[in-house]
Length: 277
Image 1 (spheres, rainbow, N blue to C red):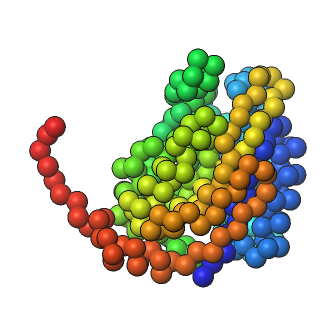
Image 2: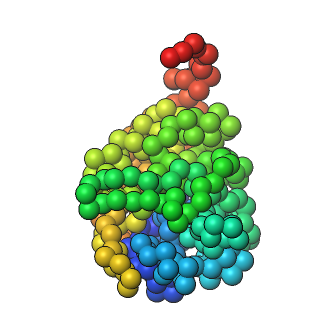
Image 3: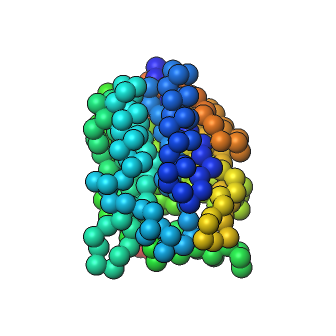
């Protein structure tokens, strides 16, 4: 049995200010017995201004949030998923990376995952997003083999693409991580049902730490995220819901539940080829 702590944040567009609150909540999770702590997508800050992002984002080797959270993991001797960070890259087109990190108890980076699916959507006439204009998509799925279990890493909008999750589970993943800054409109409609579907389809635990509330910006109108960090069991049961306030949600993980669910419905081994459509 392993205790995980889902950190729910309400970040601004100031990475320095955000880091202080993130560290506080990571330490709270550790104090409450979590050995695996997870933060949401864009832990270092949310901003709609590409100019502002370019001014405050850093490259991976210079990012203060990454360095500080690696220190937190090492000092506490925990596993830490940094849901994702916005990072500068050396890409010719100048786009950023939306990168998730799995940090080991020694503070080392065990795995990296760049978000594959970009949030290019028209939620409503006033809610339009073009993530691909500022961020370049990743191209590689990642499963990290750890003493906690095999962890399949994803980010936010990836959730709508079940083939990715099936691939991760068939590659051995037992725990799927879905750190998110889920839109408040689509979150109310789809967040829980999609997470439960991914758990049921794969027989995995799904851990989804989230951003929540209104996120003010110094160079923009701000945005709202849905909150409700969720933990889902392999059979599809909702184990924990973080609500809408920033904080820590604790959940107990027993990997025996993964084997049990897959023995009952071994769908991961029942793929068949087909013609068409």
